[in-house]
Image 1 (cartoon, one colour):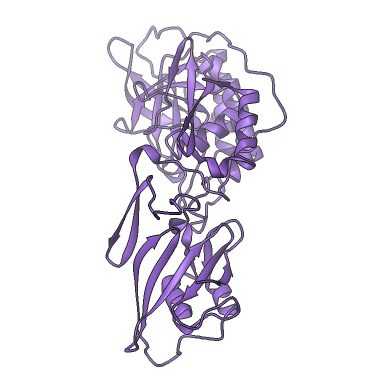
Image 2 (cartoon, one colour):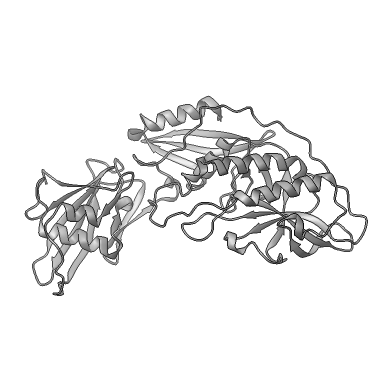
Length: 419
């Protein structure tokens, strides 16, 4: 295999499109006659995927695929060179693409991860299952960076750190009248449905006999017109107005199911104006919110579910704290790679952010996931969101470190504490 036929991927991805394949070959599937094609992935050694291709009753041929950052390199046991794609290679790739118009080779993209002499990768277990090669990264090696993957952009604008503001404490209820509480509406953005950023919703609740906890809910408050309570303090009126502004900009733009699998799912929107505006509203809300007695957490799954009457089984008590978490990083060097881990500091203690209950704009811990600390800046929020997708760690092969990765880490060192 001294030469390969080159098929470029869609820009910024490892996706091969049917359009690209057809533009590089005159072969086409027959329009009327049925011609079965059988493919089977045989092995993956030294970044090379071997696929057996059998067209109808013909003898099988072998197609060899190497995934690079920008293109698929194709060779074959017959006919393929840098200027010609064989019939077996074409129909093998056509079958992989199937009815979806593209095939994502990100799964087969492991540049520099294999020992050039032994062909072995110490970071993963490779096996075969139902005609496919399957990769299992060992648990401690999850989160590897690959060339071409996105890294967060750190703004050059070093904003003034947020100052700690004492919470404005709410007085305890003196009667059995309904009270006004506030609910954090949260979800995990997905490539479907009505996604939204975390935002606050006021609600009207009924207290228990001790007047210390909400035992039931009467309604959400989406505007002044459906708020029937009149005996409110200035802070409640102010917080209501912030909530109404949040809801106006909470809905996210549609996330396409065709977004590349390696991409940070909200990478485009998290640098947008709505994200910044939402964080600024949370900054305004926190001094008041941290002193409220009646606060809850609601995992909505989608914006379309935020309606009607609150259901007790869905709203869970939570706490907002006025302390400001400080992001910091752990840096470790191992044989062949570096490990960068994100943590946050409260007082003298360092915490791992919650993996199971991440909430954009906030830091929380696995030990107490319903206690929320508003992050210090928009950049902190962007970093927290990025690192969560790999359980708050980023592994970088030493061979990939120079260039973009080193520049990213150097920028982090300039702005954050490394431990």
